[in-house]
Image (tube, rainbow, N blue to C red):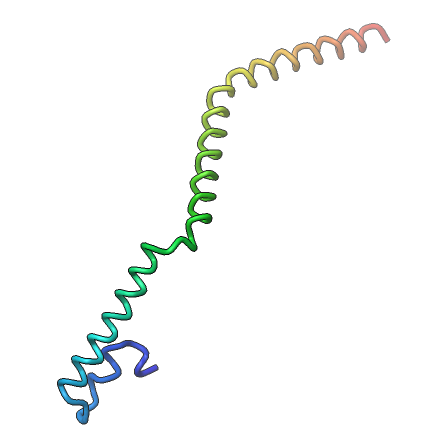
Length: 95
C-alpha cells in the first residue's frame, strides 16, 4: 500500500516542499533512533535471552554427555543382550 514506507509518503507528491520532505525524514529517523535506543537499553527481552542461553547450555551439556557415554551404553547393551540370549538358550534347552 502506498505510504507505508517513510519515503513513499512524500516522494511522489509535487505539492510537498523540500522543507517538509526533510522534516518528515528527520522525524522518521528520530523515531527509528528512539526505537533502536529503547531496544538496547530496555530489559523486556532479557529474561527470554537468559532462558535461551540456559537452554543452549543444557542442550550442549546433554550432547556432550551423550557422546562421552555412548560407548558405555553400547557396552552395557551388548552385555545385557548376551546375558538374555544365554538365559533364553538355557531355558529352551531345559524344556
